Image 1: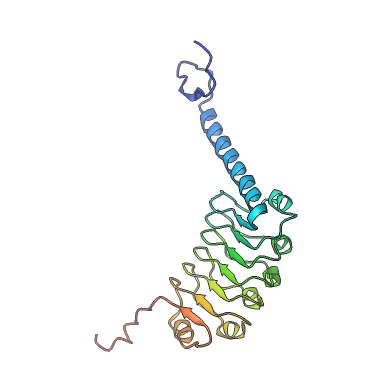
Image 2: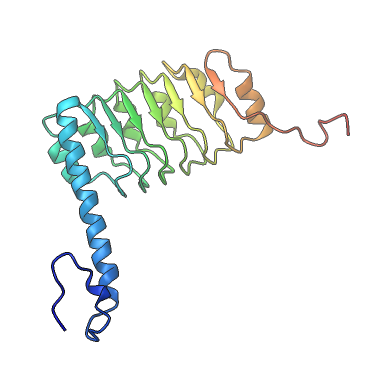
Length: 211
């Protein structure tokens, strides 16, 4: 049997009994990982030009140290980490990317943020939608210039109303598609200083007088 030629998938060499059937899967995983690395490096290079780091859909579980190294001479204005498998971001993130005004963490697996998030003094827009939050981190409401917060499509049941009212710059808060308690929903609906978006709640049986 002739040896496999360059570019051929060795898993198709069915006559070679010595080929480990797991090798095909390993090659695929290695190829995918290689593509992800190339994608990350390419987008870091783009960010060095436009100061907007887009690492969405890069199969990340965290922000690699290599990213911080590549961006060490760039003053980023925005960062998009959406569509990955990130469970947390480290305090290092807030130090290395301290000048960003927009941060998109949507569509990940996050349930918390570092306390240091409050140190992002230029941050005006934060998107943590489509994650695994069961409550909003207190530090969010300490971000001095945060104007817009999207926390929709999470698992939040209760929110501290006083924190929202005390947020220094918050103007827009999206809490739609969260399992908010009726009491919390009513309190959020009464807030006037911040434009709060909520999913209309269904009335309890005892509230529906038509039954």
